[in-house]
Image 1: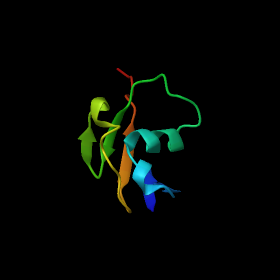
Image 2: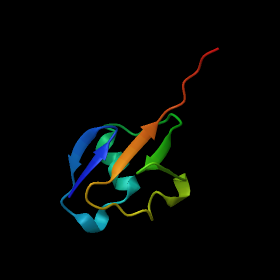
Image 3: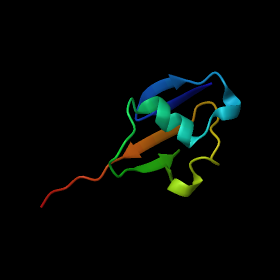
Length: 70
């Protein structure tokens, strides 16, 4: 199946393991220490729900990081 993360297409072969946690591991080469928010198809997903939120073919994930400024 194919999903989109911040506009980049990723292919996932094992669909039974496809959840937000798995997708974040695909996207980030190194574990992230910064704060970010995740939206799946436009709906925000809480961090506690990453593991239990399954993905399907064509899903779009947006990873949003806060911007500081004044």
